[in-house]
Image 1 (cartoon, one colour):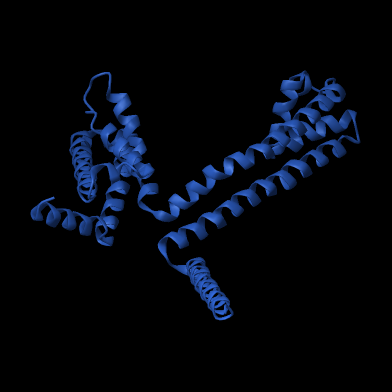
Image 2: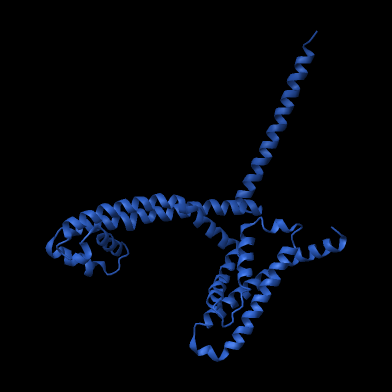
Length: 281
């Protein structure tokens, strides 16, 4: 790489890591979101041309910004080694679809909505939250499976016992599961489900309260516990990668202890060899 290219690459790297530049990019993303929202109001139809110019300017800025980030990498393929960079590249590329009056206008507007998601790639804390949510899904899946089993059992019981109360609520197991989902969300469940059922089955409250206790308290807290556990691990990993915080200090201390232990082992081995050599006739 020539000296001039290294100089420009260093300038782009300095600009990319500049906090003021990152803040300006975030502000442009917010402006882009506001432009998309403004297009949903009929009152702004008279400013449609200005909104189109503003959207074009935002798209051009995003294109320049992604090119700067790509030019800041020593090798272009290093840019695509990060998942968030690939995500930003796809969003910016999709935004280049023109918003004219063709059949692509709906697709172009839908793709521009996803530019708001670039806030996640720009803010490390949001990346940590999203990463924790994604990593929580496999563990949450087992809780969801257990919830489905409980739903199915309670729906079968409710369909057998309460089908005479209201066929639309308890006529079959599918309707019963939908009814129980309404109960689990607390959406008018008392007046629409509980009280009519208790008119024929006075002890039906036991059925509903045990179901609510399992779903609203036990399973929900299990879900929250899984997410919090993964978020704690992601936060610790984020602090470790940045070299800041207690986790980074502990990691450095562990490394120093391992290095010191290795040195002591080598010294001990050297002393043993020296003693063995001194003991020979």
